[in-house]
Length: 242
Image (tube, rainbow, N blue to C red):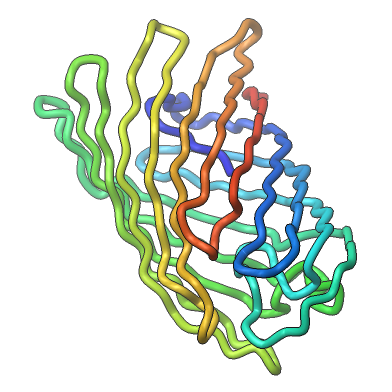
């Protein structure tokens, strides 16, 4: 999970990076599930378009009925196990549909595609593609940028695992501490996608810093507010332009 707010790349810039993410929670089960992710990322901006790709490697230890990004599969027997392997590759494209420099009000529209590259037999994914359509509104007031958005997620139905389409929403703000550093918070949630399951709700805090050599670093922590989310987690990432 990488929050990229208040830190725009230059036009025509390709930025490559990587990160580590960890979370743990019971997801409404009787045992905890720990998910560790090593992720390679790419971001390319040109004109009013931003393209992103992420390739994760997952290690999951705990309840075998918990699927990363989905949560606990309702009705699955509680069994302890572990698995690791390639996760689902995610591709996205965002378009700045509106931006007014005088008022600093902007609107981004985005589409996201999850490719089913994770091994569903290991419980690392569903084995089906998912789609998401997102709209984000933002405005800057001096050092503060407020933002909020909504999304609609079209879930692919895997054999034996019927999933429900869902709405999501987020609300947050960033504060520019100085020319290189910003910090912020974000509240986000999504409706349940598993029949009989739980929605996700998470509170995040993040810190972003531009380092020497054009590197950009980010650290975040999260607290889960619903059974569909981990109890807590953290992550860090580094990226730089080519």
